Image 1 (cartoon, rainbow, N blue to C red):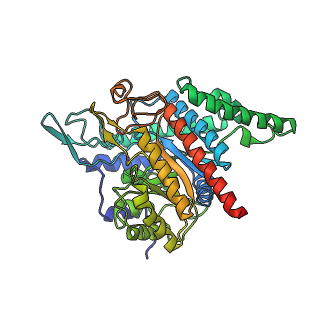
Image 2: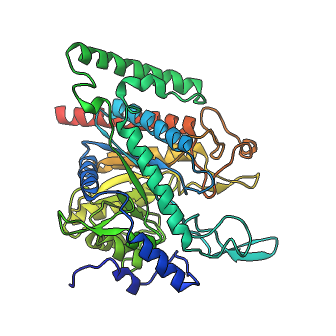
Image 3: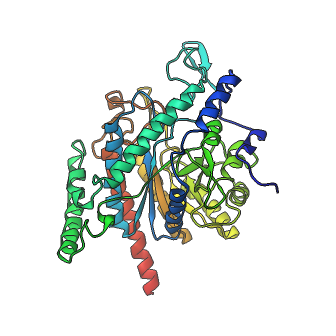
Length: 456
């Protein structure tokens, strides 16, 4: 087989990508992007791969979360800070429940493009191309707004660079200091969550105080005052991905410089398609969404293409079936992985299979359905004796009303209050933290069951 090149995807069938009408403008943007610095570095991607390998073995746990689609007009430092803060809170709860490190990966700094179920949409008898995310076209329902514009890739890069810069500052500049766990409580988080979180925070603080008395403090170990935080997005717009791909001088391999981890969606996982072709050649850890139509044979072919050397942490399988369907679909895929002896990290995405249209016309996700799919996911892995390695949520630090249910009981009538998403409904801070407590309970139960088996 000839050596992989970052442009090889161009000879493969492509889906879910725009047709740019101005080839010269597109070429100019790609040339400009190819001279920009990468947003991430190869050493970081390799470290994340090691962490994901640990999650696949049950020695760590992945928390992946953030926007369904980042937008240009809602971009703000406060928004990034609040989502980062909620993920720190969730990670603290999960670490406490699982007693293993939590790998924190944001759907941030690159999640600008979205696959669509149809190439066009019709409103009041007018048919226009679908909105595909701010990196491609605009949400406004006009013919001009829906024309794919390559210049938007430059704006996406600028916003992604600013986001990465701020995340690095938050991660290492003292904001994530473990001794500040009490200060991370957001003002609008539900009282019940605040109490549960405060109890955990108090116990953590007691442990920190004890270690401080023993001479172990943030001054003597930076693990107390900093966190590793990685970025990820669906690698959908391949012109953008190729333009930011760089050759790593250390390993001689190619790095997708747009984010630490990229994933392939359920609609773009064709084994001979452009997206699989691109992702198979980069050194980054790769995610693969697995939906109800994923067959065991599909998965075996994709695993061999995306992870031919069977590296730990290289391939994360993100299950997204819908509430009540994991028991039907997940076991056959788990069996396929076992038959191949493949190293994978299993992750639950309880969001994308549970989108419905509410009686008030808004797309939403019932919180009970999200919870049920998480429980189903853990139940299957418990029955199969395999490792549930992480969770993948669409969530925000903003106090939105986009998913129904939760402790604060968002109703379908409430959806219009603060429905800000440009694409899919996201969990708000309260719902995200509530979900973290559920996952922590599942992990704690799993650990107890494993200890019982080992003792027996």
